[in-house]
Amino acid sequence: MCAILLSINPNHVENILNGTKRYEFRKIACKRHVDKILIYSTNPIMKVVGEAEVEDVLIDNPEVIWKKTEKKSGIDKIFFDRYYENREQAVAYKLKNVVKYSEPKELKEYGISSAPQSFQYIEA
Image 1 (cartoon, rainbow, N blue to C red):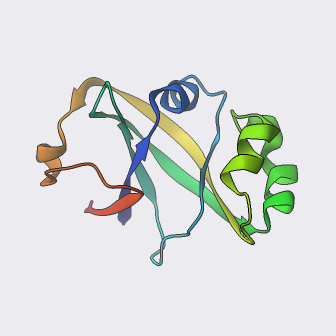
Image 2 (image 1 turned 90 degrees about the vertical axis):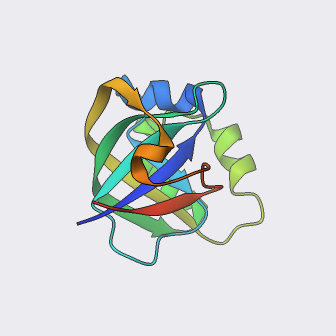
């Protein structure tokens, strides 16, 4: 099983945890198959607050990805377009079985000293 730790803005984290955001968007796909995402909420929280299983990974041009994900994207089209400006490819991780930890975890519990800019593989 392969897991990654993703740094995510607290507003998006909240939408993932409450179910309004079922996709996590990235500009680059992981090279390995990913089964699970550990959710690191960035400043001011700065803790791993939950996890989600990866149901699917969608990779295509941004317009195709938006059409497939817009209803559960948790973001608006303006934000999406700005994020993928001048990009040929968009990546969307479809999330399922999202779990919010009762006690958020420190990065050091995973052997990590600082949050990744995009993602970091975690031994699961």
